[in-house]
Length: 381
Image 1: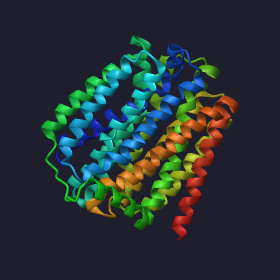
Image 2: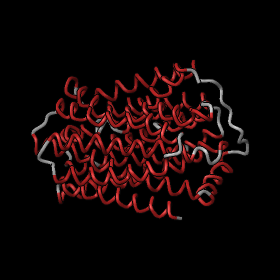
Image 3: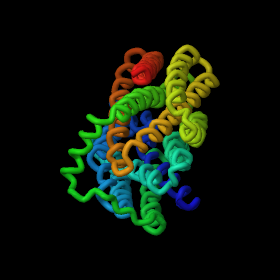
């Protein structure tokens, strides 16, 4: 696990997962371009996350079956093709279909995270996975800033051309630098998928961690799906100002290395409870203090910090369950997470249309509190 490889894995995770979030601050522009309502434009986020969940469910398990370098490079070429189709889509219906394909093929990040766990020494696994996750989380958080700036300068379609070029460069770099990793599972795809269900039945820690992170990610999705509408409608922001605001969320990625070190030292369980509580409090703060940009920025930063810390601590625990099934474990975990995120994005569109920003914040707080209850029940049992 050379330092250069750690950096490349973090970069690859960040750039690929960013494809899921480029559209969030552009929904107003997308709605105008295709002549649809803001509520209809929100469907782009939902469908992209549904596509990602489908990719997690059906493609991610291949990380335990197919040689990982070959798998990741081929998926990256597929992602580049989907991004180019999005950039030239002439109709909204076509753009929605392509959004699903972008989500499906962007699962490369979740193949690389378990691979990092395989390559890392056991005593440093939490810290190294935390560094790779830090890149992934920066990709999530900076995607909105980058897409807003690019849209301001060149129009909203430009980000899809730019990202397609990055996917091709990543495919070349990973093909050159990734070591061969051939998984031990050899009984075929159908048998592999059956074992995914067995993991759900036999690993209560995996079920608990997946549920709590899914609820927390739902809170995250509610906040960031609705925030652009709030900033434009209530504070008169343009795309460049939204881009600058989104930078505050990127600070939440600092949680990943810290959370990894805490998990290595045995504080993963109590730290997870603290993260869930912090997220609920920040959702409430965002609702009551929405008149202040400073309050919204603080709430966004600490909400992101909580989500990222909880995810790294969760992955530290679940990757230790079975070293021969980390990709399938990640399938259960991340499919749950992004299914919850997609459902939350859809609910956010409906609630924001009827109740405005307050409705989105109430949803975020309720999801985080439900996760905290699940954490408390799991700890007691």
